[in-house]
Amino acid sequence: MTGMDARDTELKKELDATLHARRELGEEYESALVDSFLEKVDQRIDGAVDRRVRRQLAEQQMQTARDSRSPRATDSWGERFGFGIVSLVLAVPLSAIGGAVADLPGLLVAWAGIVGVNVVQAARTNPGLFGRRRSSQDGDWED
Image (cartoon, rainbow, N blue to C red; front, side, top):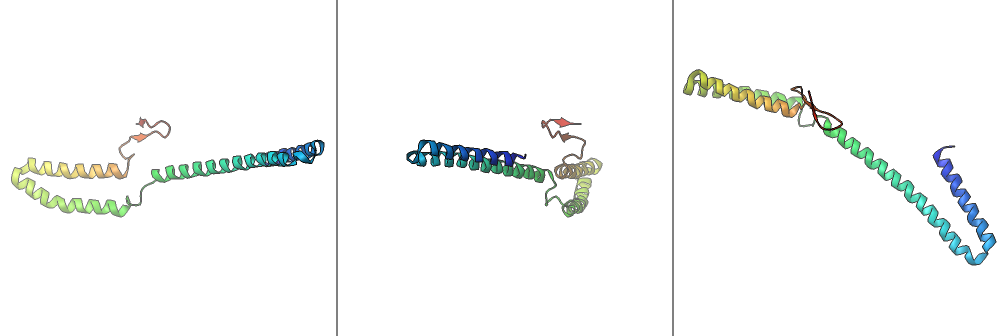
C-alpha cells in the first residue's frame, strides 16, 4: 500500500468509528461526533498543504541557489570582449603619457595598472579562475 492509500484507510477507519459511536451514543451526540471527525479531516488537509508548501519552497530555494551560481546574464562574452577592447584603446594614451613623463618606469606603471584592472575584471566574472573556489558544503576556500 502507498502512503496515500494508508492515509485514506486510516481516515475511513475514523469515519467508521465515528458512525459506530453515533449509533451507540444516539442522535444527541451527532453534532459533536461530526465536528470531531471534521476536525480530524481538517488536520489531515492542513498537514498535506503544509508538506506541499514546504516542498515547493525548498524547490524554489534550490532553484534560486542554482541560478545564483550560474553566470549572470551581464557577464556575457560581449561584455568581456568590450572590456578588453576598451582596455587596449586606453592603453595607447596611458602608455604615451607614462613613457613621456617617466620613461620606462612610467610605461611599466601604466601597463601594471592596465593589467591589474583586467585581472580584477577577470576574477569578478570568473570566480574560480585563479585556482581557488568555495567548497559547496562549508564555504571554506579550496585550492
